[in-house]
Length: 111
Image (spheres, rainbow, N blue to C red):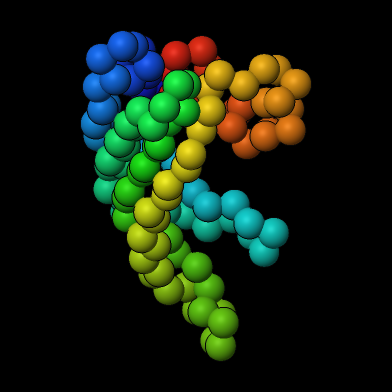
């Protein structure tokens, strides 16, 4: 799902609050791939800081099945994700290359 950032970047600088479905079905790490067995929707908040700078916050919970470190039996492990990211969407393409992780989740005025 795309979140439109036009309201945040317009002269009115409205804060955008959205609750979106978490589309991940598994967690992939070096040690393996683990299924997500339960998940909550992601609450996303985008607020204007100054110019074309935004503060993006996302919160969710999910439960994955991972092997126990001791016995290697599958266990359910809950993860609480609380993410805050400061983003400048006014950066040039060259500057975005330096800030690689910012350029891959914002496309124009969509998050």
